[in-house]
Length: 488
Image (cartoon, rainbow, N blue to C red; front, side):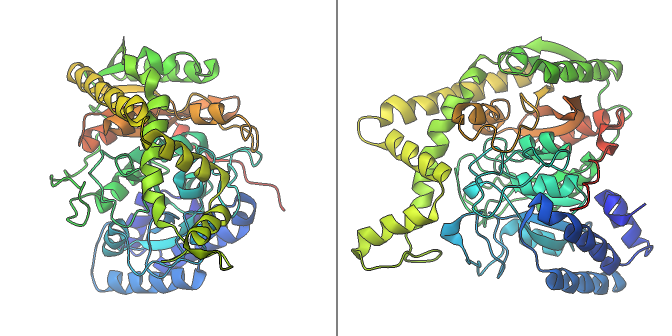
């Protein structure tokens, strides 16, 4: 078997046993990327010499007897997470050429864990999108069908993992941007509880919703990456100072006796019947494993998209005000004065979707509209959180499809903005409520991957990963790989 086909935990074990060198692992993934990335569009930046340099250093640490969990394992980083001296553009022209002078906290933790940082993964511009088509550089294509999107906004990260370009990747999840592309690409995606993973060094989109999370081929790999990046960080005011428990995965009894709620809204209007049927089959598998699955209801879920598209753009309009062409990033040419400079810089630097969200957010916060829109949206968000808290007192976990649809064609929804936004209807609630959630492969509809989402109480990532792993180990979906693309 090729090294690029192996999951991260097997690679880590082989490295620890000296069955393979770090440089051999790095070269295997570099060669795989060289063969496929031009057709997939997964990376915005990759320096093979830097990857090899990190591999040499990781081998030195291994030879010296060090044993951090990810020593020598390649990890791709989404292009909105700062890596010192490497381009971090958020897939936007307004940050073209920007190289941060510091590492994000998660990157510091990955370096400490011995990971080999493997380039910057493509994404929707400023993480605003559900298809990775709004990237200023190129769209990313789904490895299962190159004419379809990989989901978004962490589409580059998900596609890279699915295609075997890396065993692990980091994404960010504001309204489903880790879980939705994970579902569409047939991989695992975890959104930790808000505050569990530091946002220091994550370029802000919506500060009360953003959360960094892992993408991987298997749940065990996602657990390894989660443990490496989780924990309190004093540099992030929203970071929660609570212990990160050790994740132990035992598929034999993790589901037995567990009460799992299936909200009727998660299989309601807008969910592809073929997707719903795949999820019902997964419900049967859970029942066979000893879980007790019951239908329930979270009524406010039906208002999630509307609520999200008031709160998130409002915060984005504030966060993106810093891009003025004066301090860093793109600067428009000409002598139009301060106001003209800022206007022209933003006109040239921001893409259409980012401009729409800035305008929408500014409107929602403006005098005369704040109470009617933003304040009301926050009240709905509070109600949603209370409803989830109530359901999670009755049930250990909630479940449903991750995405209401499978991967759609590139360009198919470009002129149907509402349909594009509805692709996140099932993932947005966990962000609004600040809960942990994970997507795992559960089958195929129309020949494309379907994801199963589990949602847990806050800070129960260990239990969430155990349940997801137990389901995963009773199926073969995570073992399937996309077909090899035809020669270019």
